[in-house]
Structures are given as structure tokens and as C-alpha cells.
Length: 91
Image (tube, rainbow, N blue to C red; front, side):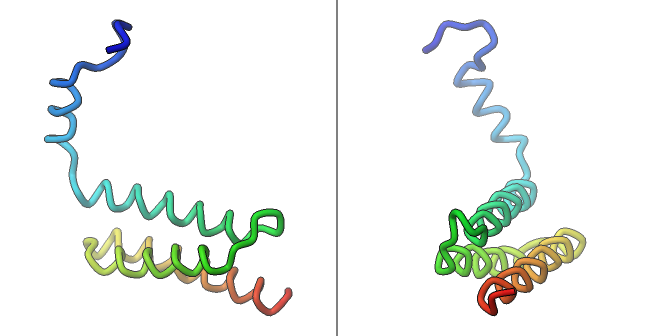
């Protein structure tokens, strides 16, 4: 325990987790994966295997989302696939 009055208690954390929607967590995870994938495509941190893994994970997660959220994640996947293809082709 940190003792800081601003730090949530264990009970408060559990209560917040009970309120959380799984779909929201998946969307947040997709956002994080997309950011990581773009980072893995950058010149200074290029790792195409890692970028491909993130893109594949995004495709898998999109399949379980509600339609409106799925479209957004599928658009992310499309953009990442184009960026990946540009990197691979040397553009």
C-alpha cells in the first residue's frame, strides 16, 4: 500500500473492474496493438514479424466485436496492412 489518499483501494479497483465492459477493453487493446504495430513499422524500430503478429491479433479481435466497433478495427487493420505492404515493398 502506498498510503497516498489518491490511490484507489483494492475494493475500489474490484468495483471498477465489475463495471468494465469486455468490449471496451477489447477496443482499448486494439488501439494499443495498432500503436505497437505502427511502431514496429517505423525505420528506427522495424520488426516486421512483430508488426505482422499485431495485425493478425487485431484481425482476430475484430471478429468478436459488435458491428460498429468491428468496422473501426477493420479499418485499422486495412491501414496497417497498407503500411506493412509499403514497408515491405520499400516505398
